[in-house]
Image 1 (tube, rainbow, N blue to C red):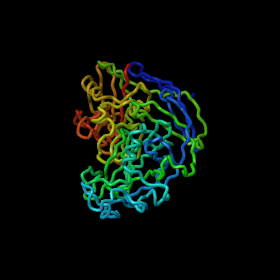
Image 2: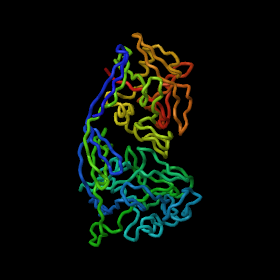
Image 3: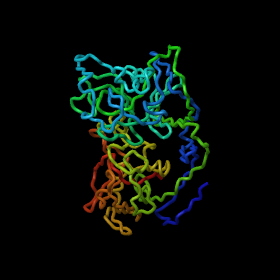
Image 4: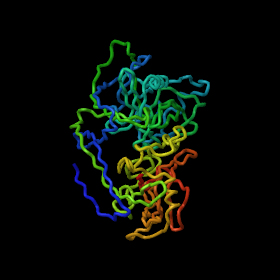
Length: 481
């Protein structure tokens, strides 16, 4: 058990808290470890998968376990523009092969070829005649007859389709190759995969190369799975199906991989996570008692009884900035932008969780950096918490140990200090003389890609301000008595 060192503090206003829990730790042979609170683990089980999977589908379609170019279900390697069979460094209209072929208008006219021919099928060309790309109808059948969930396999997020017979396939969140780079959302991600089916011009066109050929694909992310139509010039991975059906007697030889599966509870069944580990990579599974680090809190005598932390998440002193987080993320990172933000679509910039469709207006515990880093008694404050703080305490702009910031002094003499730390955008820190902190409240307007923040500068408190969810801001946690 970890030894705890207790700090001596002023007893009138500051207190210390510890919280113990039991963790299950999956230790891997490469030295990495994955920890899970036992309260969140529903079951652990062993499962085998092969190079192709029988999901018991009505059509008898057999799905590959891995993408074209990959050797493991979670591996992301090759991207293809629709109808092309080799990878390349740039994916846009200038490098695309088939802008003049496979032409199809809203009535299915022109050359009347509505699906890829074998010579233009990346699965057939790279894997042989036994394999091909799935049609859009086969993707829809997969969606209809399998249970979908957003899951994690060997550290990679993606879409898990589980059949009634217990078999499953996993589609890693590979993102989209546009121009010369992969656009990928971190830890939220999107798993987008080509079909072999051309799309009429009347269907939606994303991400938006005007006038180009369109094809159907599967679009999935942490908030759901959909079929869509998009520009054929971008690079997407390919998940093949066997050209032969389940009724055929001469199947290909099967190779199997054995996984240990950890099923975790989620906010709802659709978002439930199942993390899988290749048993060849697992060293051992152990259980340990987890002691959360002690955190100081301040009783400002607020009407709600809310207690405010004495410092930010990631800090050890009240004047330290601590860590910066994108809204809804629980870990720090090097870049803060729309392309690497959890629960934001890299296509539209709009939210796919905490959005108009799910009506969730406040961070859930599993997406709250304060809760995940400090323990279940702590959370990111709501905008109502910030308003109560501002209305019941005197605000002054002061300097503490050489750091400028906002000081809130209560009637009982207690106070908290929020340092001016600016915010992170891409890899830079902006507005370093101003104070910013996330609230847990999403701004329910337009694309739902903004959240409310506490903001102050030398002129005073800025009320009702919001920031793009991809920006990196500090967090000052609260708890209830």
